[in-house]
Figure 1 (cartoon, helix red, strand yellow):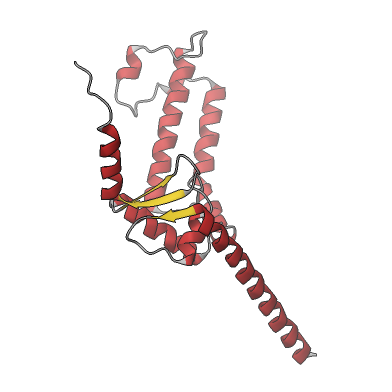
Figure 2 (cartoon, rainbow, N blue to C red; figure 1 turned 60 degrees about the vertical axis):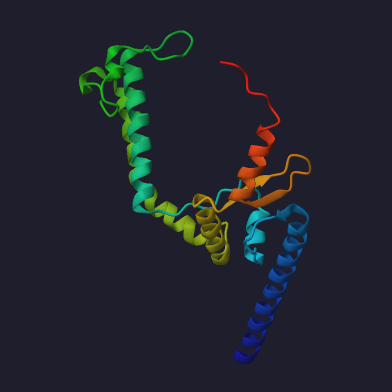
Length: 202
């Protein structure tokens, strides 16, 4: 019985491996049509699989101290706008009434006594959700990640190359292929295109 279970487990592993191989082959075939690499970097299979997801693809977020700081900053700004709009009221067109109170430092908030209970409840709910979101994000990153370990490495690699201005990843105007260019080559193309236009007098 134990031997039979081991055989079944091996067969399952082989079947899943064949599935992954076929899926990767299909993705690479699509990448051959979609991706045009004119840069000096070499794209491996995981780079190509990642780029095939499209330029609007967003990876499952991870949690870090920098992410936490950025999210709390966003929440503070949202809370401030919400509280001031409740205190100052709104115009008919939906624009907030801009009074001198909104010109004071950006993290200032109105006095608690001026805020209605509904707004206070909403603000507390928003802050509580952010306090409890860290374990949910970490769990999703581990169990529902939309990138494999190798693709996450590829994402980091391409992001660093882009931030360091070594490559540019863009979409072609005509056939909408994903094009990878050296940053200097991209700059030369843009400069050449701009030279076709006449400079207008001031």
